[in-house]
Length: 252
Image (tube, rainbow, N blue to C red; front, side):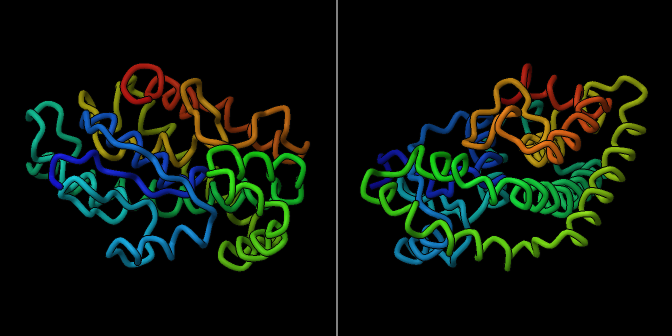
């Protein structure tokens, strides 16, 4: 059992699924990915002893719920200079704050903005949701798309006023990060890659679309005009160049 390659149970477009992929790549962990429809995949975690949290890495002697547990499990096995959240202070406290800032608020706002503008684009989103599903599950996506769209609307609060607030918070997060990296540092913490860098990169990737980002999300040409305007604005920021360098050189 412990020699089995673990399986990553995902909803493939989810930001946390991309974060888990990047963490496992950083830690050199071989795995297979098992993609399922949003909602259904949460129920499948319970079949494997989980508690609805997606993604979930299971098999091969592990059961890890979400990217944070993945990092906490594998990070101590890495050489000191490869650890994403080393224990020394005040660096550890700063990394924990970056986790909350980027994997928490920014990731949620990025997902909400993306889905608000893209879910009405049924002809684009149905094939994207189908892309890495097993054939039987992929066939039902057109029939359940309306229910999926409603579920996202409820869970993410997809209303114009809330999305306007989310865009404002994204701009504020970019403002703060632009200022932080203005001294030319290669990473958020200075001279080493940390969990905060990976969280920032994956939280912004659905809007920045850096080279090397391969999650099944709409490409720029498939986006409506209003979303492209947001993307154009963010791509002009120093944080966008920072994220592109992360994907090009240190993650991805």
